[in-house]
Length: 186
Image (tube, rainbow, N blue to C red; front, side, top):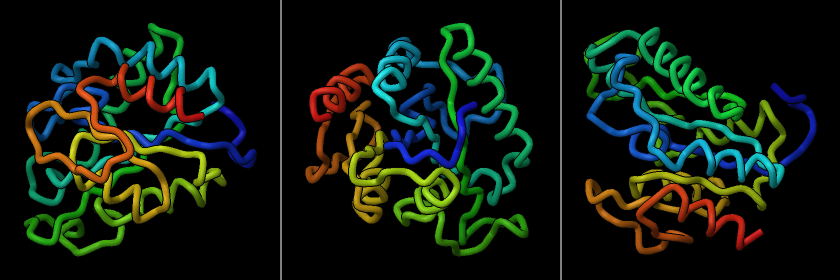
């Protein structure tokens, strides 16, 4: 883990559909499956000096599908799989809320649920991120909207599940393509 008080740009990463396969409400470690190009892509971004920060909506907690501890276990599993490739995530920022959830205290309207920029603001507060040189990579339009709200460029990975955000800085079909756009833009 690196020193937090040194200002650096960051890559804000959605989790499901970007780093790992999205089976819908992934919460069991046996379902954590990294996309094949993620580890090498993260290494390339790290080599360029980017922090790697996961920003993820996990409304399954508010909906009562699983406990917050299951989310943390999945993140531990992502870390374990990435360690085999000598790359690490700097931190995870989680929104477990949903206003229509049925599990207190998570069933609220919050400022951290994407597309609101609260998770990026939390990360920026903790790490002192250089936002104008940062990017967000997501698979949903709400990820890209979140980036725009925080003043950063967004790259959407289109895996055919969600509508496209035509205003995205980049629209790609793989993590490797997203990395290529970032490395070319910096």
